[in-house]
Length: 218
Image 1: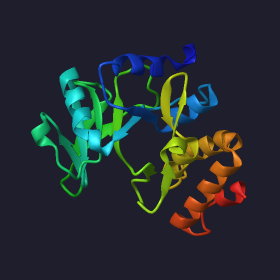
Image 2: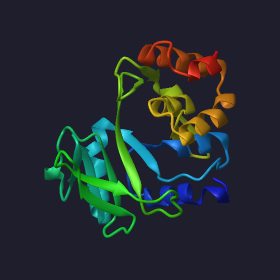
Image 3: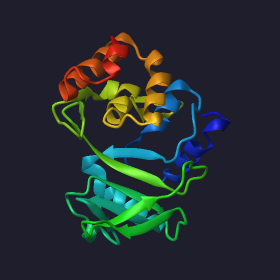
């Protein structure tokens, strides 16, 4: 990748010893797809197959990074593989003592972790998701009715695998924040007809005709 993708290039080097298939997900996928950094990104997401989740946890433990698994209403620190709970479907990881992370207890007495910055400039935080890939399909983890052929769901540019932009937008569709709306605006023009059709049908399945992006897609 070009010099504007320093964070992604550092990620690739960091994961060189990680002998498991992974791909960039989240907003950085959009930038990789478009070949330029479109806006500041606050965090870096990657995904691995659900079947490789324990390998991912073990890798970050061996790196000496702190691992916080999202468990029900709160977070659980994973000190070893034996701490893993099957209800953890993603985790935050960062060097121990990271100043941009704070901890608090919410009204439901859940232990929560807060991420306290707007931009990530160096490789000091990675969020790792466990995605189900079965029978040649990438399965949308929020609703298993939604599927995409793997060769359309996971793309590659300059040797870096990343989540297809229509899937990134689908993940962003449940929160119409200013940043997510901006990502929709900068991405929609790059989608081919088949990708737009898939996103349209997926939004209809999840939200009916109410989602505001449907007008733009049509």
